[in-house]
Length: 490
Ligand code: BES
Ligand code: ZN
Ligand code: ZN
Image (cartoon, rainbow, N blue to C red; front, side):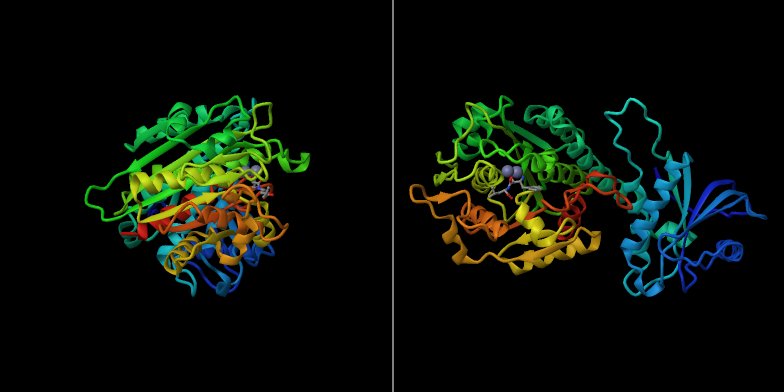
């Protein structure tokens, strides 16, 4: 659906042409587009400031019905995110005015923080990600995504970047799928249903899949995960997805928190905090979707994705605060708070994955703590790891795709806060402070000396606000990050 084109605008009919306009530089070498921009600037006060938009109809001499120009601000502030946002705004605009096809002109110059390759990729990504509506539950499907988005490039670029549309499509399609899973109502994605849906997708791309049901989890002694599942009549599942590369020297394991609804359990969340808790499987959605992309991108490493899926509910069967359970690893855990359920399912899953697959690197992704949102806000994820190289690799991968990550500490002495009078460890810290850190330290007790990083995505997994290439709801945060990271690994 994404295509690179080298049209002559005098000769080929175009319905809607989109072009970015910079405040203080020409982004194009092509005379036709530069003349259009000059004309628009003569007719209207249009300087190319961010958020400015102007439409020209049937410009003389060209076979173009409509040209929509989008301001992108001054040249020295331009980075790839500028182009993702521009392309996203443009595609959303076309959806709004019901044009089914668009041709987006790709800038032809380089910038301080954005070379030609980065610019093209960013334009394609922003366009693809914005071309999505979640109308599953709407009777009236008034707006439709575009059928085709083409990109106007020079002939040399068309050749040089010919494999780019497929790569961007693979990664962004997975991102949209993750968004859809997150947006799905919690009554439509209970663990059994979600596991089935993930497996169905995984088959399509040739991943080896295994699903452990409750019986298997009991036999394997997943005591912590089962304690969380206890309160819900919807039974848990553990989904394992394996991309196996026979010659690979390394296996990377990805674990995603999959709480399909987090009510808090017996420590029931207050009404304000509970509303969006269908988002609590965003880590699992990101890992599952990334695995589908990985099966197509074929990185050099073997990758295992593990998704513990449970629903955290209060009931007569639910785990109580004060309960002491034995985890998969053998450590006993006092449940100080049933709302600290994510770390319980992750602890068992990570210990199991380490034992079964002996991964060289393990990364877990989870909407783990409200405290991480307090620390870093709604757009930045926290990265917890003792491995400097891994930390830098994650943060760099995130920068490339604008899924921002920030390093957080794992101070040994804070482990005191997790002491239990009766069990080996408590699942909740005994002070109000540093909740994102104590959660990460809890997880660290279950990974031994495996090279491990924890990414807390509680902030960026979900948005209440419309963004340039994402609508309110799940953001798919983590899919592009993991793809970008794994493509660098060998
Ligand atoms: N799922 C929540 C964390 C969360 C909060 C995600 C806000 C997204 C947005 C998690 O299970 C939770 O409830 N954490 C508690 C831990 C506490 C009880 C130790 C929290 O953050 O308050
Ligand atoms: Zn919780
Ligand atoms: Zn949770």
